[in-house]
Image (cartoon, one colour):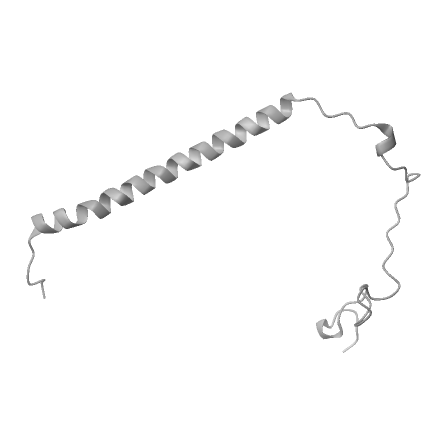
Length: 96
């Protein structure tokens, strides 16, 4: 079956604004991608050219070469299992 009214000139005229709008949006998208790439390369270039900031020695904490990180003795909120153990529902670490 074919369409009852196939006036191609009228269909072209009616679809022209939508097609022009899609073309404009596609060009805008391409332009934004190029602008994004240019800005990223410019930021990377200026970051490599600037010398690193000097930090005063008093601002850097001393740790004697060892940093210890221990889990809390009790759960943080006071309820539930310890934060260092996997939940029982995962089946990790337990015999089944």
